[in-house]
Length: 281
Image (cartoon, rainbow, N blue to C red; front, side, top):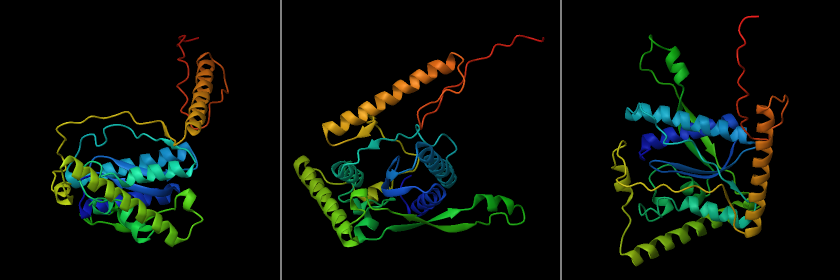
């Protein structure tokens, strides 16, 4: 997903179509060269899974077509982490998302990232971004009479204020974003002074080959959820432990042959017990 005008337009088009299709609230997002972060709200785990599945599948198809990439596009399935409802947790995750690109030493400001990011729109007070979606179904149906004809259509990505900012005026929401970005810029400058380094720059990012791989990669385990206080953390851990216990109990009863077993909401039940063939009667 190396940033370029064409790549950015395609990603925003897919994101806009996915949002319209599944009615997801998007608070913030950033697409790096090899992964992305989205701060969002879905009505159910099923809705979120459908949204992310559509998003990742169509980004893989469009960018694979663009770069001639026919192998596996994503390294692993997506990971979602629940957020506590507190204002401090929302602010912390929002700032973490904005800091991508800066914390890796690539750019000096969230506004300097050359790829798809909600930061410039939020900074300027705009809550919409535009991309292009290509109707591949119409393209296929037009063949062979119109071979090579493309069917683009504009898509709009709509941003929703963070829950704790929902009742604030637009200028207050913008002031919050400006302050968050200024803090990140200050922390980035201080870190580079301390380490005697400087950002690689947007040009370095855009000149990388789309198929290049990092010389060293050190993945870390992603947290199951985010919280700012011990109380929130204990509550979320307890809720997850209870859900796991209910799931395991239901799975044992299902495998034992029970019918009509109820699983916790948002779960994928395991396959049923294997039925041995008894041969012809």
